[in-house]
Image (cartoon, rainbow, N blue to C red; front, side, top):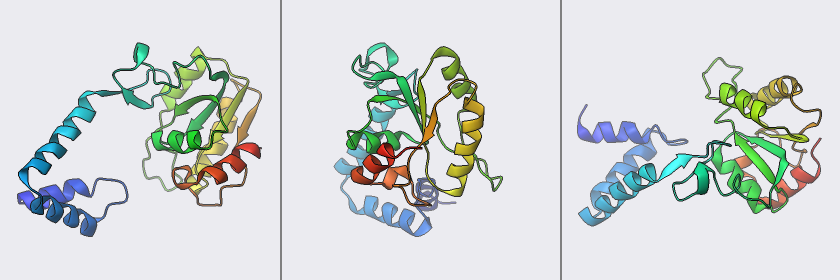
Length: 195
């Protein structure tokens, strides 16, 4: 495998990027000046060096944060008795745009899979999280895909040991939708109508 193919292969590891799009990225980089390419390399190195996971919710955050916590977990203005479980960090950004939720989060890192394909889900970390914290409500904000629904059902049963009130986002989200792509008004309705 030559350098071009190696870089193309690396780009196909990005979510939603197939071989054709990956080749376009490589050609794009080849057309740029060396200053741009160096800036890109530095930006990648800087984000890796200056980012860590919040020790509480596992959301990626900058090292400038207090006590290794993200800005949400370290805020005194958040409702620490309500937790929302999401699949990915980007889901938090979308939910925060709705301005309808003021609790804390836990990032699962993925869902369980019915197909047997290994999806990453932080089950051990989740268990430790609930052993450390007590909540009045757990909101399951997973995508309405088959795997998301399967994971939601699994978590409802498993987490009933830790909390009596477990809700899921209302049906403002259409079946097959991912939280990441939902607009703020849809998320607002899903939060208002949680079950």
